[in-house]
Amino acid sequence: MSWYYIEGILIQCGYVLMVVLGLSLLTGFAGLFSFGHAGFMAIGAYMAAIGTAKWGLPFFPALLMGGAAAGVVGAGLGSMTLNLKGDYFCIATLGFGEAVRLILENWEYVGGARGVSGIPWETNLNSVLIACVVGTLALMALIRSRHGRNIIAIREDELAAQMSGINTFRYKMIALIISAVYAGIGGGLLAHYMTYIQPKMFQMVKSTEYTIIVIFGGMGSVTGSIIGTLILTFLPEMLRSLDNWRLVIYGLAVIFIMVIRPRGLMGGMELSDIFRLPARRRAARMAAERIKSMEDAGAGKEAQR
Amino acid sequence: MKSGGKEVLKLEHATKQFGGLTAVDDVTFTIREGEIFGLIGPNGAGKTTIFNLINGVYALSGGKILFDGKTIAEGAAEGRKALQLKPFQIAQMGITRTFQNIRLFKNLSVYDNVLIACHRSANYSLFEPLLRLKGTRFSKQEKALKHKAEDLLDLMGLTFYRDVISVNLPYGLQRKLEIARALALDPKLLLLDEPAAGMNPEETDSLMQMIRSIRDKFDLTVLIIEHHMDLIMGVCDRIHVLNFGKSLAEGTPSQVQSSPAVIEAYLGAQDGCVKEGER
Image (cartoon, rainbow over all chains, first blue to last red; front, side, top):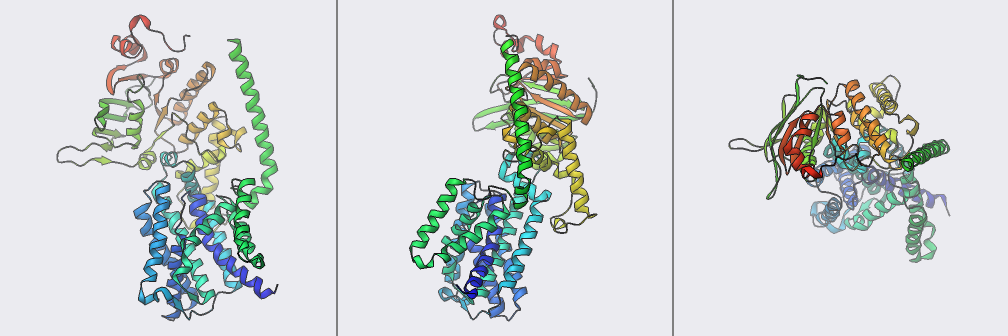
């Protein structure tokens, strides 16, 4: 296996990771499932590609423009759909993703079904690495703030969150917009790596793939999303020699992980939590013992009555 | 008991209809500052519906609710549109609550439950957390939030359990945690929905002590729904009795206990009158 080949897979991991990080915020932390992230990715990819290929913009501003466009569309989608509960929001995003693809397929300015070609090859290992490091750090910073905690509260119990004075609509909106921006930047990186894009690159299968990665890695864990991305991007590539069977093995691997670790690989924990795990377990055990002795004492008193 | 304080919460002819059913019918009462006010009534009397009206979970069909002199909900009438603040706005104004069927952030630790609810004590923006340096507004406020959460845990006797996932706590402690979370918003009015449900008499006793002490410590006004007559009669300054959504009586515990209408409607026929807790 040549370095050139591995580098290619790593770059692929990079732009997938950008989308997955965004989706991780929305699904893993805010608890909103989306099957339309390929749509945001498509918007980012087309916007950035048109920016560089047609309007002659430099790569970096075009990339940001792609992210911003996806964010704006995310805000529009959110204002219409975020009042929907649970599964209904999910279905709305599914419809959104397909609608974006069909619009692109029928819009001549962006090349219709042929898509956009002649995009400058700008995405390399360095640019995806920078995007991923900045993206990960920014996401972690957000999550470890009151804003991030408010988003987590929505996932845990939306009514209780409202009663704690959290503007749940606003925070769901924030999560969706940031998530869309990440997906848009991921799409822009994809476009400038492939040097051409077509609407059929952004089918629903892609959206489900990203959701699978988030769940595989563990909901509510950035570390899990990163590990999930690496494993689930490398695995099919490593198995190329098995031809079509590689997708069967991919599926089995996902099922296997979900059976042995139902909450995903990291199960809501971050890397830093792992080091604190023994201390936490000890504290939990001590607390459990005290709770038990309290209950026994309570039961004793009850029996005396 | 403090009395004659200023009005904290006022319901004026509050009415709530669900289709053809009138769950709350023309209820009027006033709660004054520092009071512990009880709301009792048989099952289906509309107690929890009133809580949900005060919180803004349900929109008022008619009448008016005032908090601290400001209208928080008003039913539509001729020439006037309905006014309804959102639940989170009402919580931010200073009304927080606990739930009959405990609603904690189940998969989070005890500490995180309280820390989340402290969020109103900080006001840094969405982008400030990106710069994680000492001395920034973000790190100062974040530190203050953590202190506040720790103090609240301390006060409620939950410090020992701070890293326990909240769903693993025993029932009584979950109730305490819910109260701690409600206090984290620095409320003026605390609504407790059946805080003693599922508690044994000793736990109920200590709950009564706790309600009084947090009332004094936080300058709170408390509104309680409860079925445990021991608790209601022991802790409340005044009680409002509901039956089938209508007001039946209001007064001090002894006044309410001796009201024939209450005895008949709430405790059943007079000769069958057995108070709960006197098993």
